[in-house]
Image 1 (cartoon, rainbow, N blue to C red):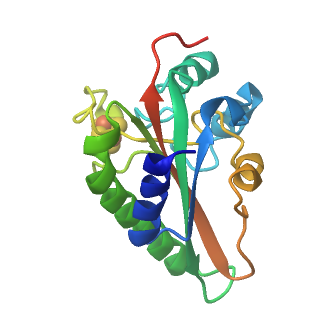
Image 2: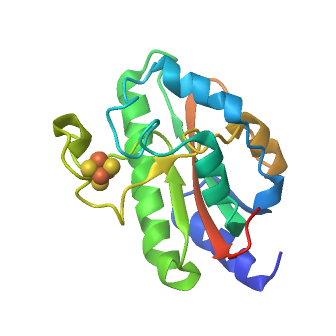
Image 3: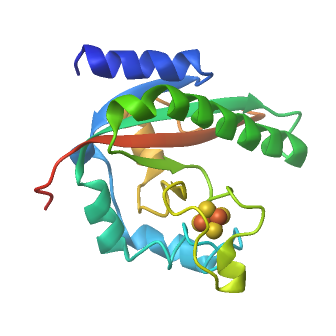
Length: 187
Ligand code: SF4
């Protein structure tokens, strides 16, 4: 890790992240079998959002795309909940995560381009994804997928980044990532 990486980490923390780290992409635990969780469609976004499976690409395609970048800036946000049924708190946590990611994007995008941003959950740029009407994506340059859609095992990734996957009772933790340091010769 170099001084530039450290600056990126500081930017995440200054933007509201609870923890941040830089990891070599070849250390990220990819697992093609995780796609089955998306196919189970617990979130309801499967085949309804261009940034989600199956539209986002096959497991092999997304993993190849991620591996075109040498490094990943990983960050997590943590929001307190009243209890484990606090759906409003979870939504507040998601909003806080998106706002934090937006701040980080604004601060680092000019320095790390080209990059690939990943977030928690599917793309929420449009209130209803254009996929619902079978129209083309309205903002293909801005659409953001989840770490899970890219077949990343986030619970295994967290400790590799010096983070906890869950940060205590009555909290919700979301992860975000910026892959950078583009390399042409990906495997
Ligand atoms: S930018 Fe809009 S249309 Fe494109 S993936 Fe995101 S929500 Fe869907």
